[in-house]
Image 1 (spheres, rainbow, N blue to C red):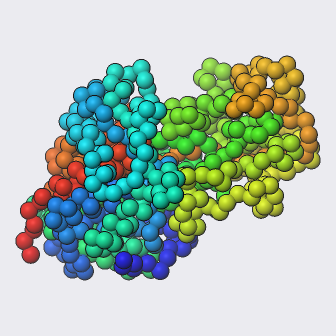
Image 2 (image 1 turned 90 degrees about the vertical axis):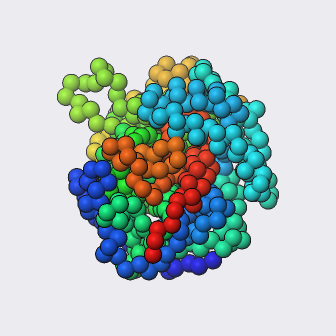
Length: 566
């Protein structure tokens, strides 16, 4: 399989998502033309094409793979451009590998209509549920291995009308392990077997329009060495570029709370959003995300790691501490953790004080971001703070793609690296936390933390958490255990997301619409870019379902376009 990449350094990546991304985003937000006028976008009349294909797919994750397969099966010539330097698999690869399926189209439509409160048209959901109802047959026809888990997984809100209309399947690899890697292994084999070419290290950054018809006829892309390529699409372009979870400027503009950490695909920096804005695409669902609880991010890294044991510590001698040395919510079971971790965004408000309880003069910032997991020697010795036995997250991919190395079994390697802070006394651990997060305004007083620890330890002795109702036993182990065995250890944590959902508005054919509701000709999307979900992520496996359902819709319709004349 062709690969044009020699690798993308972290420095190059940060340049691309920092200064360059800021400049492009500013153009997209402030200078975008209305009604697909093409102002600011590259005109086809000024392009010298380097490559040509019929259907051009941007992004080789789950949505890109399904879109490419669907277009290919309709007889179209397909080329894929992928931003990453080599195969990685996008959000799909590092997902848990579940997709929702539709058991009852009418009930599913009722459920989804209840969810979005008018923010996604019913005709879009009608197309979605019809595809979802045929998904299992498509999976069988394409040789994907899965387990039907509809008896236990489906809709998350059982009190909503139509909640029993969804089920789910979990994809398994040759060893029977459930993971998104199984989907990506299929995708890689499909492209190889069907001769679909992928150009890696090729970041699409600008759509090319015909100056008269406003049809999207190709893209401009750049490689990490600064060279560029222009690719003509005779039928259509399908954007499968993911969300903006690794673009801090967009996070600050569109999401709360901010900042947020992420356990995701480091190349998802909002490229499709910026390209769409430049040619007048309308946007929707820009405040939507699916959460991943909380995470630790290595210093200098872009993405965090999956599998924190902090919610199920082996001894129960742990607490979460904010910058004032106080607990701020129940740590286990957490309001922002399992079993509905993706929906924990609905509880992210807990990272700030409840209005009305603020002391006079308080600046009303998100003072609980970042926060610290505080443990004592008992917990440090009991288990690693991160569980390496995971079927999801960045531990499944290479370091240059944002992957993380395994956590040590005894926490000592992380202590030596300075990721885990250590203090022989409360005063010393407070000093370490204040220094570690001084840029976030940490000014913890040792006396305040000592008072918090004393109150918690007293509650442990009484067997009742008087502050937040944390149960005395969780997961069949003691859950209220005093922090009474110095030294103390602290790990810096933040609320975390998996993917964002915002992007260009699409219709039932997966065509992208402009700000007047008109189709931008020959431009489609699928996946988490412009996801149909609004208000809340409400179906288990909704991300992969979006890839499968709208990937097939986009691929078929793109392949059906009449080819442009030479």
